[in-house]
Image (cartoon, rainbow, N blue to C red; front, side, top):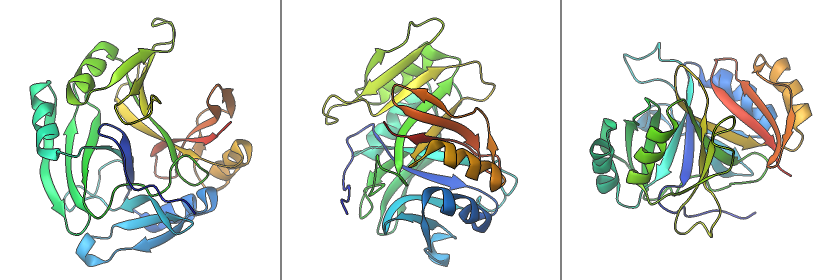
Length: 255
């Protein structure tokens, strides 16, 4: 099976789910995405790899000590070959650093921040772990987008963080969506920004599935909630939903 081993700067390269009950999360995501799970042990504080065909696709982790009541959420990490420089640009662009560059033994370095809209995101400098080893196929991430009401602020912040080329693919009014391309992505967008009147801006992860309608039935049957019935888009058949812990995600049957 093919293994992905690199991501250009600014491309979402990894995602993990912070949740109070990782074992319950396995019961939900395993059947829907075909994942197996490998807990990395006490040294990694309960971090659990989600494997698609034996390849790391995402991860689960409990909240840090003292933050057990943190809402469940998928965390998106943007690739940064020079993490210190990228993290320094966060504050310069008006964002807020939350967790400074920190080494993960044998894997790489990470940082965490808030953008100017209040959405949280991570930065990842690869070491032994480049990010998701599988992408764009069933059981893997296939898209990421920032949903927020402050479109201009978000576009300006991230353009200062990485050399994104941001192209409006809607009309900019009723449908305001910019697709972001970076050097090294072969001219293909790596993520996007969607303007919507949400109270809490967030980065969303899309996971590919074989059959969107069947996946929607699984979500409901396994204790999640389908937020919108499966619908067709130019990029696939989509199912916005939440898992049983309330974390948002979108399932996508690729065209």
